[in-house]
Image 1 (spheres, rainbow, N blue to C red):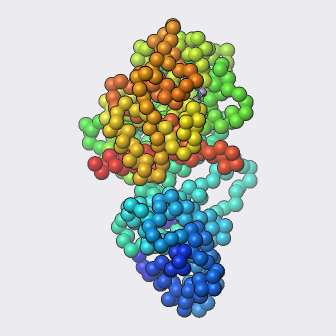
Image 2: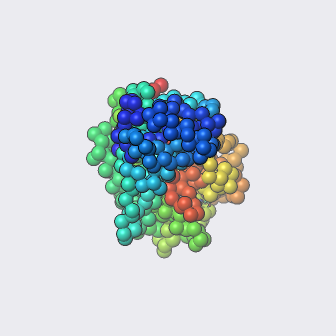
Image 3: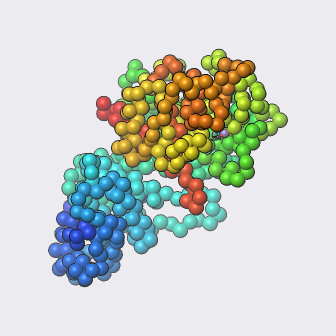
Amino acid sequence: MNYSIETNPLETLESDCLIVGIFNNQQLTLAAKTLDDQTNGLLTSVVNRGDIAGKLNETLFLNVIPNSDIKRILLIGLGEQKPLSVKNYRKILSTIINEAKKLRLNSIAVSLTDCDVEKVDLTWKTRQIVEVFEDAIYQFTECKSKPADELSLKNIVIHVTDSASAETGLAQGLAISGGVSLAKHLADLPANICTPTFLAQQGLTLAKNFDKIDTTILEIADMEKLGMGSLLAVTRGSREPAKLISIEYKGGEANAKPIVLVGKGLTFDAGGISLKPGAGMDEMKYDMCGGAAVLGTLQAAAQLNLPLNIVGLIPATENLPDGQACKPGDVLTSMSGKTIEVLNTDAEGRLILCDTLTYAKRFQPEVVIDLATLTGAVLVALGRVPSGLLGNDDALCNDLIAASETANDSVWRLPLWEEYQEQLKSNFADLANIGGKDAGTITAACFLANFTEDFRWAHLDIAGTAWRTGSAKGATGRPVPLLTQYLLNRANA
Ligand code: BES
Ligand code: MN
Ligand code: ZN
C-alpha cells in the first residue's frame, strides 16, 4: 500500500473518495464543512434529509457529487461531539478501511485531523491509521492454488494540518505494521513450510536487508558443545534439525548493553510422547508466534533505525512423538547445570527457553524479555484480551505496561511469588517441568525464573493473544506493537 501525508486543501486532493466525519448531533467536522462549502451544501442537505445521524461507525457513501471535481465522499459517524476513546477511534478506522475494500475504491483520502482522541497526539493518530488499515488489508493467500482477488485499493492519503508529526507517525506505523505482517505471515504458514530451517532463513534475510543486523544460526552440534541438554531433549523426537537463531541489531553505542528478546519458536507442538488430543491440534503451528514476533520487532526496530542494541534469540524446533523422543520421567541437564525432571513432554516451551535464557547471559543484557505461547492456562486466567506478564523486575514490568497502553496491545501482570516454586519440586531432579494443575501460567514462569536470576527479566505469555481461533482463525502479530513501543520509549529515554 502506498501512503502519503497531505496538507493541501482537502477538496483539491486527487482521490477516488474523500472521507470525513460527522457527529451525532448532525454537526459536521471542520473537514466536512469545507466539503459542504465546495459542494453547495450537499452534506448539509443529506444530513437534513436524515440520511445519516452521525452515530458512531455509521456511514453514508455519496458516489455522485454534482458540479464538482470531487468524485465521491464517504461520511463516517463519530458519535458524540467530544474526544473519542482510543478504542472507538480504532473502530472508526476499521469501518473506513472495510468500506473502502467493499466499495472497491482505488484510492482514498482520509481527513480525521479534527477528530480529537483522548490523550494522544497527531503522531499517534496517524500511526494508528496505518496500523488499523494494514491489519485489515493483510490476507494470507500463499497456500491457495488460485490467486486471490487483488485488492483494488492502492493509494491512501492522510490529510493533516501538521505534516512533520504526521510523517513521524506514518514512519512508525509502517514499521510496526510491517513487523506485525511479517509475524502474522510466518505464523499463518503451515508447519510443513515454516520449519526451524525456514525460520532461520528469515533471520538471515533480516541480516541481508539491514546493514546493522547480523544473524548467526547455532546448529545442533553447537548446542551440544554448549551443553543445552534441555533444548536438545525436545528436538530429539523430530527429523527437522533444530536451530537457535541469534539476531543482533547494532543501532546503539558499541558498549551499550543490549535489550535481549527471546521468542519461543516451536514450529509444531504435538505434545511429544505426552501427545495432545487431536481436536484443534492444527493450531499448534502457531507455537512459534513468540519467535515470529521477535523477527517482526527486530525488523521494525531496524526500519526505524533505533539507536539501541537489540539481540533476538529464537530457539526453533518441533515437538513430536517418536522412538527417540524425550519421555516422561527423563532427567535432563540444562546448560545452567540445573537438572530437570520431565513430567510432561508437552511442557516443552520452558525446556527450550531455559537454555536460551542461560545463553542470553553472554550478551550481558540490559534486560531480557521472553515471549512465548507457553500455557493454555493463560487462556483460562485472562482469555484472549491481554497477554500475561510476569517478571523479576518491577521497573521493567511497569515499562512494558506503559508501552502496552500506548500501543493498544494490552498485558496483565500476574504474581511471581516464591511460594509457587513449591509446585516445581521434583523427587529426582532439581526441578520438575510442570507444577500441577493450579496456576499453570505462573508456575511456567516460575520455572523460567530459575534461569534468569542474573538479569532483569520479564516474560510475556502470548498463548491467548498471538492468534485468533474460530472462523477468523489467524495470527494477530501481537506483541510486536507492544515491543516496538517499548523500544521506541527506550530510544527516547
Ligand atoms: N504450546 C502449548 C501452550 C498452548 C496451549 C498454547 C494451548 C496455546 C493454546 C505448550 O507447549 C503446552 O502444551 N503447555 C501445556 C503445559 C502443561 C503440560 C503443563 C498446557 O498448557 O497444556
Ligand atoms: Mn506443549
Ligand atoms: Zn508448546
